[in-house]
Image (cartoon, rainbow, N blue to C red; front, side, top):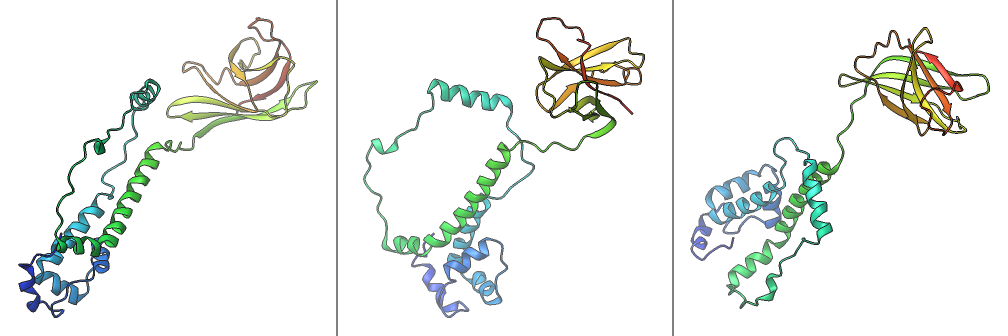
Length: 253
């Protein structure tokens, strides 16, 4: 905002002897730095400097974080992906209709050059804060550590050397079986089971495709009864029953 000729009549009453506060100092004040006594006295008597400070502070305010960040819903990303795939994203070209350049007074031009650097600094800070918001919104939410309810050491059975560990974890009220069993190469595929303590009943939880896997435990399953974790080598023959060839096994405790 330029100083008008009308404001120049106030210069003789200013504490600094007629000069105005340096633009770089105004930029620092806009960022929240408390003013020196002389600058505070000057601002009290100088409407142009107060207006310039308010303009800079408004730019900085654009980058301030208000409230808790909200993660965009899945539908937002789906719509973005759909629009990109359909080629519906367009960019308007306002330069297609040329207009005459606006008339700029010399006082305005001098004022804009004077405040170009402070405005750039303030705008950069605002843009940086907005960039942080965008990155934080895209980052996945941190997963809180899970409570281990019980665990079992997986000991290798005859013919196998692989050993590992199994843990029952509490995931927001749901029970998850996490199995870690490296260095176990099956002839077919590895399947994870929970077996009853009497070795008469068993339930399949799924296929272990890597060294580590997590499996949902049915909510009504009694782990005091089904307390044995078993990892078996299953042939690819379409038979869903246990092959009888267990790689490792352990008792939950």
